[in-house]
Length: 145
Image (cartoon, rainbow, N blue to C red; front, side, top):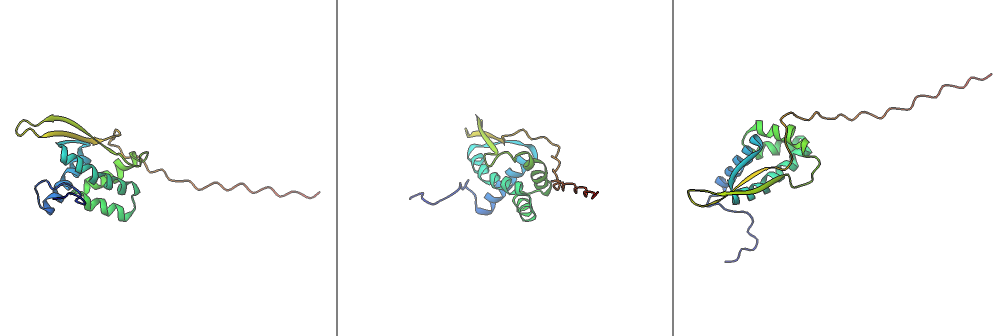
């Protein structure tokens, strides 16, 4: 059978279970900043979390709601939009990194850690309000002598 046009990994699960798995992994990544899972799950999570981070960086109401829907905890969604996304504004993509770690003892599966590329601090970056451009001072009226 050909594999053309079949996107994504199945993980031996049905659609709803797969979606719940990715939601849970993404939520854990946002809450902890770094998680360890199997390599195929980590690679699939990269595709999922990159889209959420891009939406979180836009930060408007519709994208904020999409991020809330994409994560299983509302607190994690707020953390992604308000704390993590402002710290990743210097990048257009490539927000997370996957590194192979070890072979799991039980079944020999390749394990990997997935983490944000930039160091994430827990304090939210204050929103920089744009100051309106200062109007030039009115020229003093010339006195007629």
